[in-house]
Length: 230
Image (cartoon, rainbow, N blue to C red; front, side, top):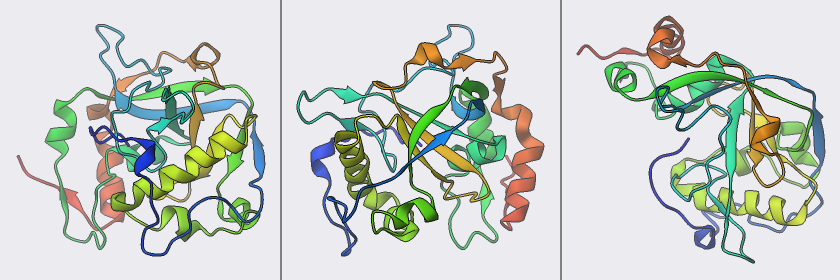
C-alpha cells in the first residue's frame, strides 16, 4: 500500500463532488476478536528491519488511509496494515495496480521476486476498530463507493476521513473494511499510538513472496491475467 512518496495530511480536498468530513452522523466501532492476520511488506530477514509487527512511523507512502499526521503536533501517526487471508494481503500489495479491465494484463512477477517482499503472519489481540464495511458506513451516511470507489488520485480525500476518525474517536484503535481488490477478505489499518507494536505477536513465519507464486498465478488467472515472460 505504500507507494514511496511523502504526503502530508493538509493536502486533502474534495474530489469530484465526493464527501469530505465531517460525517452526518457518528461512525460505529466493531470488536475484532484475537486472530492471525497476514501482511505483505518489505522485510530484511538478515537484519530484522521492517519487521512483521513494525508500524510505519514515516510520511513515506501514498495509501488510501495513510500516511497520517496529527495536526496539533505535526507528528506522524504510525500505521500498520494487515489482511485476514494471505490472498487479501497479496491482492492489496502485490496485485494493487492490476488495471480494470484486467483481461490480457501481464504482471511483472520477476520485479516482485527481486525485492524484499515477504508474506508474514502476525497475531493481534482483541481490537476496537471503526467499521468501514458496507453495513458500518450506513451509520455515518456514507457508501462503500464514497471511500473505496476511487483510485490513488483521490487518496488525499480518503486520508482526510482517516484523520477525522482518528481525531474524533479517541478510543478507536484503527479501521476495518473489506479489501477493495478481494472483497472476500477483511483488512485492518491500526493506529500505532493506540495499538502498541509489543502487543502484536510476530509468529515467525515470514516467507519471501517468491514462495507464493502458485497463489499469485491462480489469482491472476481469476482476473484474466498472466505473468510476463522474463
